[in-house]
Image: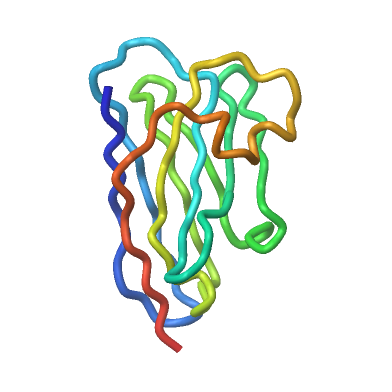
Length: 127
């Protein structure tokens, strides 16, 4: 099973990008998929997640209202629409997928919930 993230690039502050993460080698749905990011010299942090069963979405506070996560069931693909980007959003963005059962919503914010990871795509926002 592989997750392939793409869509990163260089954009000016205030601009938009759309990331996508496609699954290959798997025919049945995930429990959830998510996006994390890691800026230079910082820890990897949660950005957003979406569940497959009921499309419930979870967002980190610093992206709420600017980023939107969505999914395509048929393609086992997750997207991250990023608007109003600012230089603090510069990071490598990683997609992740979970096939284990999650009991509590707070678990979607944790990297330990996800057992498959993509390779990352660079997002650079210039001021």
